[in-house]
Image (cartoon, rainbow, N blue to C red; front, side):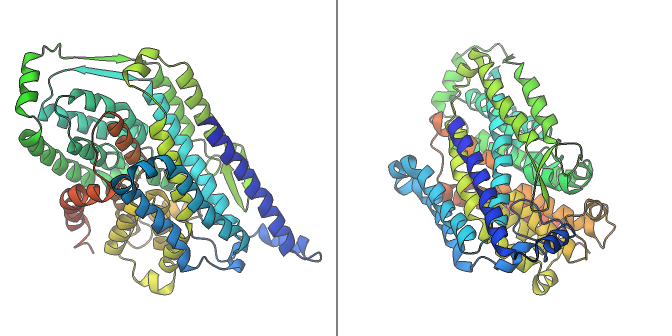
Length: 507
């Protein structure tokens, strides 16, 4: 893992070097001073990896990615879906090479054909932010052992899932998922089935984290852009309550009906329980607190935070350095009993790291095409509560939900003459100082978080929970099996009901 992260920091430096060379070639000797002065007046380009750029950004002169460049992204999604099902041995041994190779095809095309270093550098910066947060939460929470010596019941499972959904707003969906997935599996060790894990992904790894910017990455990016911290709690709680209530009732009914075989029930009856909950490795809660505090050290919000200045933007590195340091120290200083009890290993975060470097690298053309259309005259005319909800949602299920959130927020703001890169305008948009703008932001926010549960790749914790479950011997459904057996028949109707209640008849 250390070598892996170091290699990407080296690539980051390489992209900066290539960028400087390409920009130097594009400036004639007689123009450097004038262009430099002009560059200082350009508006700040869009958020990392969003695929939307200011019209005056230098990269615009190099044109947009062609539509066919989305093929590597589609190919990667198809292989993620079919690999574990049809060619499991090949996929398990080669997915890192495939993910990195497909990302390299797209990145090299941007660098040497489009002469566009902007998108790859920003995508890489976003990836480093993404993996630093997930890795630190994964490792720090892995050193906390929660042992529940109780009899497994449908009601007890529902309570654990709802508690996890609430906790996800305090330590993020990743932190809550890593903290509770192993206790959840151990609690149901005599009767664990795939649906237990799927509902965990629905409730704890995604929908639960809708109430604070800490809860889910897209909401955190919105906070960094200027959305007030308590806006999500004030506006998202009714949909949060509705969706979780329906899921809790459905899980209870399913678990009562299918949760325990006769043999498992007999085993539980014979076992004796103390009904106690014990904790080991509690010092790691302090490491989690350090991570949460570090989340707010963003140079785009706090001017005193050191930053890397590039292409008119400030890139965070202090925050990521703290998180990676916490990842290292929390593991080295962790309670060995807790690590052993959790059967802790790095395979889940390794899988996420490689799969998502492929996703971040290959999805740039897809996001650019979506963003360009959304901000066009035709696209802006299509912006309604309904299109924002379903558009943000469906793309969040198959693209990473954080840049998808930013794409649709930028498009919604642009349609009303506002700029996502102006913090005060984002704040005004959230506070409904534009026409129904707070409601539009609500549609984008809820959809990006809720629909992240539609596939294994919609949100980072999904893949890690799946990987941990498989290491525990649970045969998880394939990509298509997840969508066809669970997302479409169970989650999609809830998303439809949420739309009917809050958005379908609005305005």
